[in-house]
Amino acid sequence: MLNVNRQVDHYQDFVKGVFPPALMQSSKPMVLKGFCDHWPAVQAAKHSDQRMCEYLLSHYSGLPVTAYLAPHSAQGRIFYDDLHTGFNYTASKVPMPAVLERILSQAKNPQAPTMYIGSSNLQQYLPSFSENNAIDFADIAPLANIWIGNQSKIAAHYDFPLNLACCISGKRRFTLFAPEQISNLYPGPLEHAPGGQSISMVDFDNPDFDRFPRFQQAIDAAQVIELEAGDALFIPSMWWHHVQGLAPLNTLITHWWRNSDAFMGRPESALNHAMLSLRNLPKDQRQAWKALFDYYIFDHDDNDNRHIQPDAQGILAKPMNEHSARQLRAELLNQLKR
Image (cartoon, rainbow, N blue to C red; front, top):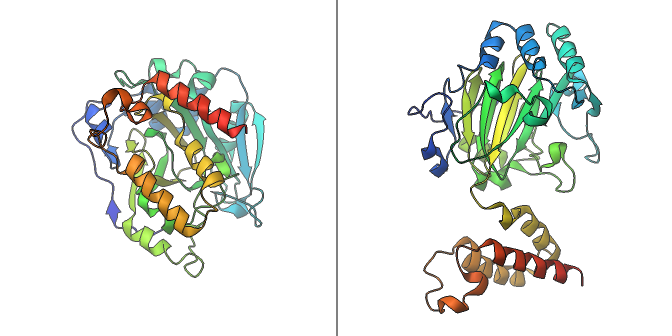
């Protein structure tokens, strides 16, 4: 376990089951202690793991889920193989009851393999779950996913959407890093990764400081929190988080949403395009383009365009509307076809 001294701040001013609008403006993680403690699912989990599984299956649609199995030798770490071209686990489509039954049967086995159901759409697999286990998000419509497993370790990664993660059963430890810590976390390949998102290549249980010397700086800046059943954690967009399941059965529900219009597209697309068109330029040219990106994108504010007449601002106008976004996307697609 990393020796992290900084704890995630707690947000106190909330009503259970009602997402605090003030968190939408927060750029820092926040813990909501007991936020979903009143949920029937959490109450079932506090009774026993068996009762929790029975409750989940009472809402199960019958569709097979994607389950991951890693040998005990992986020590719970969902990661690459030794060559980083494959993974240290197998994935298969199986009925949810079979996974839950095996997790329960292996609960007291110290040599148990890692068993994990990751990022499964709640509406698809447990369609009636939210009827009695709901959050009032007002006008936000988040994507809700469930994560179930025994003792597991999910490598540090970031997500573009904002996230309210609710611990339903067991205990999970989140180690969080601000976006600017990326170079100290040593991200792996972009093309393929567990879960499809670039991850830190550092083994948090056994960090190799000779290979990853800057990781100590990440540790010094890290924040950590252990969520128990009924607790929730707000994770801002782009914050890196390492997630460890600590109990024999750990269940988490994430709620993802973006605070920008979906028609604006995915920022990852801009990064991929920059990989294609900018990354291999000579350094002086990259620096010139960096100045342009800083001016037009990263350091932009609403007063930058006052020297241009409003009707002539084109794509510089803010905010961009859906019509302008579609026009720009069509132009980009035509350019990429050449």
